[in-house]
Every structure is written in structure tokens, then in C-alpha cells.
Amino acid sequence: MAILNRQPDTSARASRRASDRHRLSLGLSGESGDGDWLDILVDDLSAGGFSVQLRRQLNVGDLITVNLPDATQINARIVWQKGSRSGCKFERNLSRAELAVARLKAEPRVDGGKAGYHPEDEDQQRYPRRIRALIWIAGATIPWVVAYLLFANRP
Image (cartoon, rainbow, N blue to C red; front, top):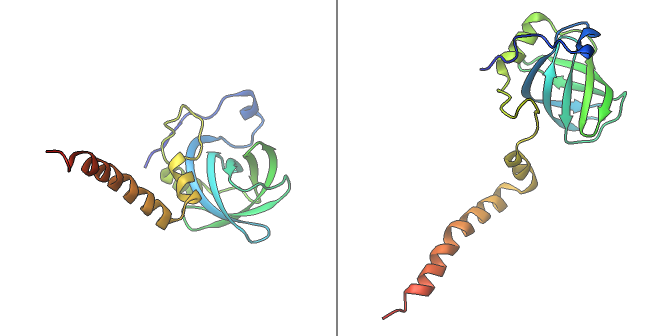
């Protein structure tokens, strides 16, 4: 339960915003406009919107439904994109309570301020559970087999 960046963002872009942004790392789920499941990693959050990294390419103007930590669903529209990052604007502003719950559920940003997916998350998506188990078993067994073959027949 980490609340990060208690100080509001004071950059030039922040002065144009209607609400303060909070830098954090928050994994959420959601749904695209065509009904596909989305894994969402929120980089920063405000009452009016958020910036996010998506594994699936969406377009500016697309509508997504986001499942907030307090079990609220809220629609957001993608308003900008840069690579895998997108900026989204909520259809309605988050309440203070919704924003507080999201901030409490957020993980600490330990990567110097640049949120991103963890490599182990990518591996879990890339390989099914059985393949990961076989790789682990092979990695644990092969060194013992090699050692046995090298040293078992010695006088």
C-alpha cells in the first residue's frame, strides 16, 4: 500500500490540466470497445484521466472500459498515443474516494519514474504454464544428469 508523489506535478503540461496527476504503477483490467480483454498498466492517474501502457494496439478515439480497484467500471477515451503509451480521458471525473482507493492499491515506482511491464510478466504471457514447468524441470534436472554421466563411471 504505497502512496507515491504526494506533491502534485508542477510541470508546464500539468498547469493546463484540470486536476493533479499522481505518478504511480497500477495494474488494471479492462475491455476494448469490441469486447476484447485488456491488461492495463497505469503510469499516472488523475481524476480526469490517466496515461497507460497497453499490450494491444488501440487507436486515438477508441473507447475502453476500465475496472477500477474498488470494482467500479468507468469508460475512458484514448486521446493521444506515443508508441505503446496512450493518454485516456475518463467520461466522468473520478470521485475523491475512487481516486484514493486507486492510489492505495498502486505499487511503488522503483524504476526511476518510468513505469513498464516487468519481464517476468511477459514470460508468463509468452509461455503457457505447462511449458514453463517443463523448462524449470529441465533446468533443474539436466545439470544432475551431466554430473552423473561425468563422475559415476570413475574408478
